Image (cartoon, rainbow, N blue to C red; front, side, top):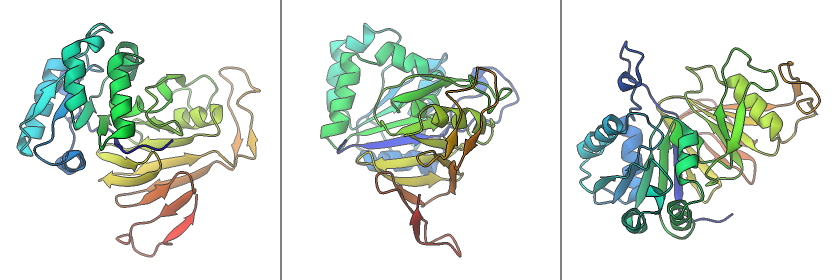
Length: 290
């Protein structure tokens, strides 16, 4: 799959308010990552469309993005809050997306993005722009997780590493060879990503920490950005995988699941299975096989 556009999945970064309501846990993007989104989109004059469909509090989330992009000097930012499939076919929305330089999906529930936008004319325009133009698709948390073909829909940590702990579904299909999870470190999501790649052993699992993201070029060349870590699970050389044999609720066993911990500036090539560690990291090997 060859594309001209850029994907920027981000792991999310919760507000540290003491309240548990979603209104107090908005998905904030640190200025460093958001500024990279703007730069990849063409700069301060870029037309940026924010889609808060995943959120249950779209007004608050939209205002947050308007303020955040505004601080970076962006004045051509539009909100497109899709709440049903009919709205995803609205001619005004389609016209705006055809002119946009970037679309940004907010956090919340990734299944809502697929439910209301997946397979619609709006989705097809986003996909075509991504394939043919220098177009940016960015997303945080749920907005990042929806980017893959095989999408994690949910799953807690109590049953981690047992079959059935992760719920999978069809994503937006912007990148077919990854499975993306967010809030990976803080929420202890190692188990559900491990099961996800056990179910789909030809795909690479990506666990994004908060305030951490990827810049993905041509669906292949990947750069780590932000202040946290990216955990990469590569199951392509598993020597043992009993996921298909055991019953739901039963612990799984995997052997030779390769794991890499990457940080800002590190890069990897999906097709060539190569890592390139940032020269800023001391005493490291420049390049090694995934």
